[in-house]
Length: 353
Image 1 (spheres, helix red, strand yellow):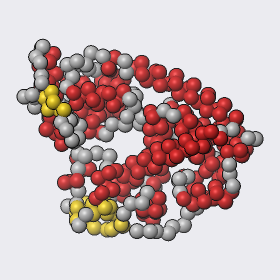
Image 2 (cartoon, helix red, strand yellow):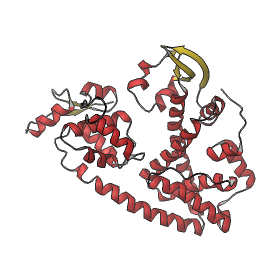
Image 3 (cartoon, helix red, strand yellow):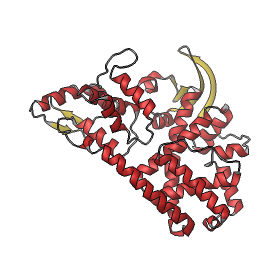
Image 4 (cartoon, helix red, strand yellow):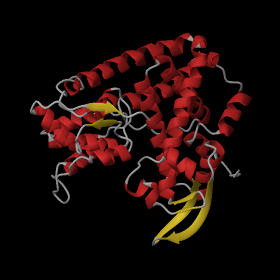
């Protein structure tokens, strides 16, 4: 489904990955050599602001009114991240940009949302207006895109809990924006990889800024890794599924909510404090302490219903794609932990899949 929509200058600043922006840059004849000079310095500084937002987990500062400055700063920021060549930073930067887009899209009309989902990301999304199961749905998306970009595989995101008809999943505006957020995150990461072809042509002013940003990133990364040192030690009694989640967390991967819930509830139930659990999750690319603290305290039974949550059972872990092991006679991660802590040997077999 191809759509035409009127795009303002403001739209192109908000969504610098649009094909219309790339065409404008091509017409402008912009090259990396244009980064030498006063205007080039401004572009580099704005691009650096975008990257530092990822390093220090902050929102990208508000856009300036200079159209050329804003749209050129995006590909330059991609090049900076590509040059630093660190997967953790690439993930962080993709998340910062995708969340910025998500915030803008939540306030857009349907036409612009559909334009980005269909024309930019190449999905099949169709507007609709139906009430199913007592809920209003404004869009339907082909199930293959829903499955690939759904942020979760449990709760309301689980496919069995969504209206599905002839291969189309009915979703709300909020849900479509959330799917697009994940799509933009992947798009940005792909653009970072493509930017690596430009590394040999980086001019001196930009290289100087890249060296400084890389130095600052290494310092920040060391702080993250120091906090994770204890996490990777003393886990001999942990079941393999939890060890795997911890390893992914230590690598700076962006775990889905189900994985974070499983790991947080497991750690809380074996005696870790809320603050200890938060230290573990501070390495997440999209970590926000206020939100994370609320969620962990809720899991610990300190908020809401005051119910302390238990991790998923082994069968549920497998169904959610969080476990790829068979542990002899074990039905629950906590069962594994307590038996091994008492000295019992558990036979573990990796599931081939």
